[in-house]
Amino acid sequence: MQIIAYSYSEPLLETAPAPNFWGQEVDRAYQDLGGRQQLQQLLKDCQTQPVQYLLIQRLEQLGDTVQQICSHLEQLETLGIQLIVTEETATENKANLLKLLAEIQRSQHSRSIRKAQARNRIKALPPPGKAPYGYRRGKDKYTVDKSTSPVVKDFFEHFLLYGSLRGSVRYLAKKYNKKISASTGHRWLTNPVYRGDLAYHNGEVISNTHIPIISREEAAQIDRLLRRNRRLTPRAASAPRSLAGLAVCAECKSPMTVSKVTSYRQDKTYLYLRPIDCPKQPKCSSFAYQEILQLTIEKICQDLPAAVAELQMPDMNGIKAGIVGAIDSKQQILEQLPALVNNEILDTETAELRAYKIRTEIAELQNKIAQLPPVNLRETAQTVSLPQFWLDLSESERRFYFREFISQIEILREDAAVKVQIIFIF
Image (cartoon, rainbow, N blue to C red; front, side, top):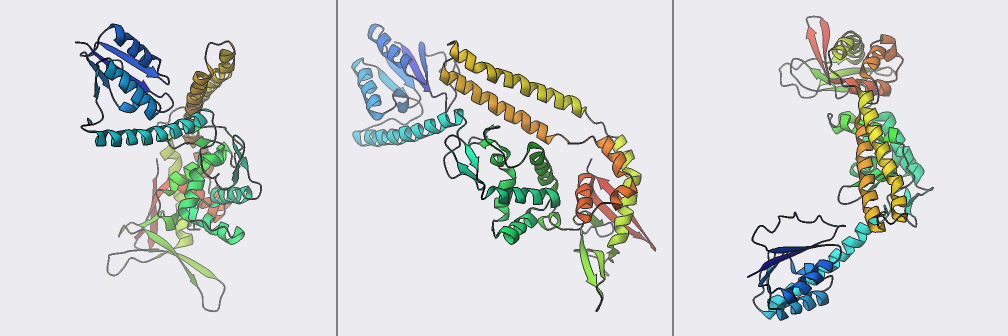
């Protein structure tokens, strides 16, 4: 009694099973990748070498259409081979068989659609559906829409300047009457399409497929701002004041908010930091905003150089050079593929598959570069430890740098004196 097995895999959609997938009980195993040559060889061998059982995973592996599957089932029945389907329930009557065949037909239709989409993905063509706002669908790639792309560009520039997602959404509504939700704005900020890349439903990204709206440097800065804002509440992340979201009362541990007070019939405005939810009675008093800002700057200039000096930091230049070298080597492989096809060393489909895999690997390496710190922390610490550096900045610029270095500012009142303790993010 001989037991054989057959498996079919579509390279565009799935990986082939391991050689020992069927176990030791199988006398022979046949495996097809993208075609069914081995299935024809199986039927030919069975005419000279009687076989009792054939193992397959699913009936749909016996053909691309229901007609092909039925034809191969008839041939197996003629040869007296009993079919064992491992991933489907056995059919006990004609009604169940018809139901199964209808399911196979639906599965084959879905599979053909996914194969067509996979072929487009291999060729770095845009996925199906409407082009993202700011682009149009071209013949084989996205093209910039000159009427809407300035709106998207302005949105990104506003976010890079102020670091506020909700503020940038309000800015679009006010200037362009373009109303989007905060979630849509977040998708814009993280969408690879605006960076010149294509992202597919399987999570893979192919880089440099069309003209970007933002540069790689701007994209890296956006990612850093989004990661930084995750530590803050949405309201604090969009607040205009530099201490918002960072100040905490050392006594009651309550976060502090910035309050604005104006004098009666006067234009002068006073700013205070007060606890949001103080449980004490009487409640902790508020602090003058300008006083805490000055103490914070003095504390940064005093403590930051020592905190940075204690850090064990890797060689970022060396790490970046290694990643850039890996990208260059993969680019060289891409450039060699057309010659391999012309010399008939590789067929076109294999070369396209290889090129697709290399492009996704390059995109992953570029993403690693984007996640590296953009500046040398030790050199930056020397610059920001000068009081004049902070005094020359606007509130929005101070907010940017504060959130780069500071995790929390604890404010404590000791008798008549006020002290601050800074907790750095590293």
